[in-house]
Structures are given as structure tokens and as C-alpha cells.
Image 1 (cartoon, rainbow, N blue to C red):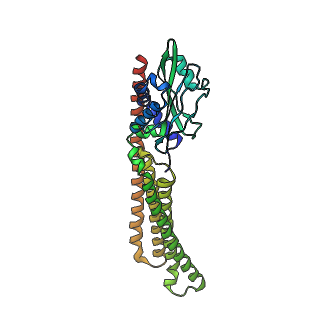
Image 2 (cartoon, one colour; image 1 turned 135 degrees about the vertical axis):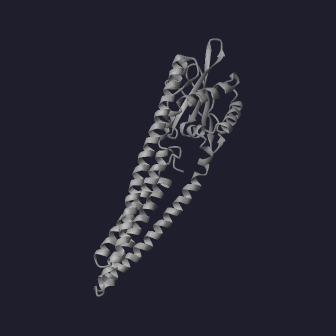
Length: 329
């Protein structure tokens, strides 16, 4: 399954920064318990309960006041909480930014996105102090996958489960189109070989090169469609929540159609110029259709870009208002 690019994940983070941070803070606040410090089984049960509700949670562990890890990692592996023992115990984490922040702030903190050293994915760390003794604090730490968190907030979790099936179908369709291209090219090359071997003797022979060009042009249009399908739906991540992704696919598809139609119109005009006058009206209608398609595509791209720009501006204004309210608080 193609994952979201880092750029897309970061853009979504800044778009939903406030609800992301509020959700992580509420999760840590809800599970903070002094009994988790030494009860590893309880910590695992807590991890199971969290992951049933929040599948983006990756790691849960405890630190003491000096930044030393005093509990094992409770991690998700293959959809289940790891049963490994002594994982991470005694690690010195006092130099980690999240420990320095929570140690200085003595409140719930959420880091900015960073690359995880475990799997190189973007993640966030939430930490909260727990008073484990008189004047002594321990810290509950929770790591979350930013990509999975964004999908969770956008209600995209269920769709992503079926995404491999969708990509498999698109891959099959794209490869089938490439098979059609291979058949067309084989026929075109066969006709070309025949045209090179046999000299031009009749009027039909004079038009044979144009029929070869028509087949090759059709093969080019189908190949471009197959290439677009494989790139947009299989090889690249497609953000279904952004209008630009759909507009890009539609634009590339229509552009290939316009090119194919324009070439067919030119070929019909050449045929009419060589004596097949009955093709003149057909050529005119085909070229007129290509011109209308070009105008329609330009209007579609322009209006789509305007609409998305307005949506982005509205989101920025809303985010600025939220940030202003947070500052006032």
C-alpha cells in the first residue's frame, strides 16, 4: 500500500494541529495512573485498550525524574501488543526533547512531528508528569504515528484497509491496457512492413500510411491512459480529500484524449487534401470537437484551482482564529 508522502502528512498536521494535540493530551490524561509505574501487565492491558480505540498509538512507557526508562516498552507489533520482556528498561532519555519539555513544563506536552528512529516514519510524542512520591515526578510517555493519526481524524481508516484491493484492480486494468497497446503496435508494425515491401500501386495503397498512423496514435493515447492510471492510482499516493488530486488525474486523461482527437482530425484533413474530399466535413467536426474539449479543460482547471484556493484560504483563516483563541486563553 502506498503511504502518504511526508509533505502530505506535514500539510495535514498543520491543518489539524489543534485537534491532533488535544486528542493526544486527552488520551494521556485519561490513562495516567500511578499503578502503571511498576505494573507491566497493567500497562499492556492499557495499551490493548487504547489501540482498540486509537489504532495510531505505537509505544507506551514510563520514565523516572532523571529521564531513565523504568518500564518496558508496550508496543504494537502485527496488530498485537508485544510480549517481549526487558525492552527499553534502563535507557537514558534525559536528552530527548520530549523529556526536557515535560520536565521543565511539568504539564502535558506534545512534541512537533519528527522522524522515528525505529521505522523512519513521522510520529508525535506526548508526555505527562505523574507524582509518584513526595516532590518526585515520573513521566508517562506515548508515541503515535502521525500518518495513522491523520487518517483516523479524517475518517479514512476503513478506506485505507481496502486500498490494496483498489490498487490491485487498477494495476490489473493498467496492465490490460498495456496489453492492448502491444496488440495495436504489433498490427501497426506488420502493416508498416507490408507497406515497405510492396510498392504503392493504387489509391488505397496511398492511404495505407494514414491508417498505420491512426493505429499508432490510438496506441499512444491508450498507453498514456494506462501510464496515467498506474502512476495516479498505483505508484503514487492519491489524497482523495484534496480536489487537486482528482483534478490532476482528470486533466491528464483529457489531455491525452485531446491529443489523440487532434491527430485524428489532422489525418482526416490530409486524406481530404489527397483526394478523399468526403473526409473534409468529418475532419472539420473532429477539429471543432478538439477545440471545444481544450476550452472545457481550461475552464475546468481554472475553476477547480479557484475553488481549492478559496478552500485553503478559508482553512487558514479558521486556523488563525483558533490560534488567536488559544493565545487569549
